[in-house]
Length: 325
Image: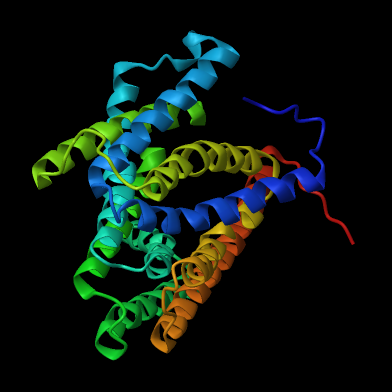
C-alpha cells in the first residue's frame, strides 16, 4: 500500500489521519477499562488481536492477493518475538493492569514513558544520547515515580496495578527498540498481521496460565462494544492511519502522538468514567508528557545534525564540495 511520491496529499487528509491517531489511540485506554470490567483481560485481548489480525489479513488479500501475505520462516520467527513483546507483554499487561484497578488515564500516562525506556536500551547497547535527551529521560522517570507514589498521597492509584502497567512499558519499548534488529517482513501491514496473530496466541497461553475463561463468555453489551471498538478502530483503522501518515508527513509531526494520547486518555477517563484527576496525577503526568516532548525534540535535532554531518562527509568523499558566500 504505497502512495505516488510525486503527488503530495492534501493537508486536510494528513490532519484527519493524525487526528484519528490522536483520538482513537488515546481512547483505547478507556475502551480497555470498560472491556475488562466484565471480560477476562488477557483472553479478551487475545480474541481482539486474533480478529483484528484476520480482518487486516483479509483486507490485504482482497486488495493485493494472497501472495502479499507471504513471509519466510525466519521472518515469522521475528514476528513471533515481536508478538510476544508488543501485543502480549506490552498491551496485554496494560489490559491486566487496568483490570487490577489502574485508571485508564493513569495507564496512558505511564505508557507515555515508552520513548524514555527506548533511550535506556540505546544507552545499554552503547549508544550515546545527547545531554538534553539524558536530562529529559531522567525528568520523565521522576514523573513516573511521582505518578506511582501518588497512591500514598491521593489513594487513587493502586501501586501493584501501576507496576504491572509499568512493566508493560518495559516490554513495549524493548519490542520497539528490537524491531529494526529482527528479521521481519518489509511490508508494515503484513508485519502487523502476523504480529497480531502471534500476539493472540501468546496472550491465550498467558490467559490459560492465569486460569481465565479462554472462550468468549456472556457479558454486558458495553463490554462487547468496547471490545469491538478495540478490534476495528484501535487495531485496524488507527494503525492504517498511522502507517499512512508516517509515509507522507514529517516524523517530528507524527511523533507528537506520544504525548497527545495520554492527554486524550486522561480527559476521556474523567469525562466518561468519572476517573478522579488528583494533583499528583496532574503534576506527575505533566512531567512525564513534558519529558517525552523534550526527548522527542532533542532526538529530532540530533538526527538532523547527524544527517547534515553525513552529507558533508559524503561531499568530501566524492569531491563535491562547494564554497559559497
